[in-house]
Length: 257
Image 1: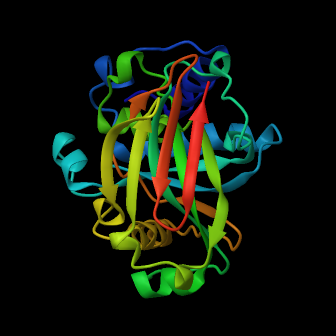
Image 2: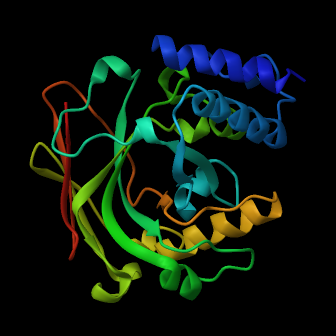
């Protein structure tokens, strides 16, 4: 099996130079999920060591349809560093990305640390604020062609993230599973969805992450942001393009380039 440190270095260079590469499992089919998460840890640690601290986490494959497409039964997760948070109201710099795609998400700001065995109720009680969010995905693999270990190693295609301007307590919102979202591209409706598209309830996605990290001896500190997973399929982001997501109660978040 290829060494995770070698994979991490190649992914780090691909991201730095904005150049897509072939998935590692093409040449190394024995590259497995455990090695992939170790690779992800090394990639993220390189960022942290360079002065880009962790601020949270992101989830992927949180919908049943996406899981079935990848032949898995669980989501996956990546980490979010400070430089990944894009300023709201400013265009996304496409020169810093390879092949950006955008999907709407519900983001959680945790006001308390959670341990293993977390439930939806405990996640909501620990949540300081809920935001409308946007995940600007950016795979380092050509044409988004990858296997599960490849995408995990690539920090789950983490690129940039945006938060909408409105923050609300969970108690100020209706049931998050019923919270609606209208996703538009240049003003035209592309998809509609509700929070239940993410594991039946977006807080269930956060609870899954907390519990999975606890199995690895890790936790999510208080003050962390968690992007709970895409409510819809992603769409490409191009120059001169505007993508918006309108959330019930949370307002609109826009990404443009």
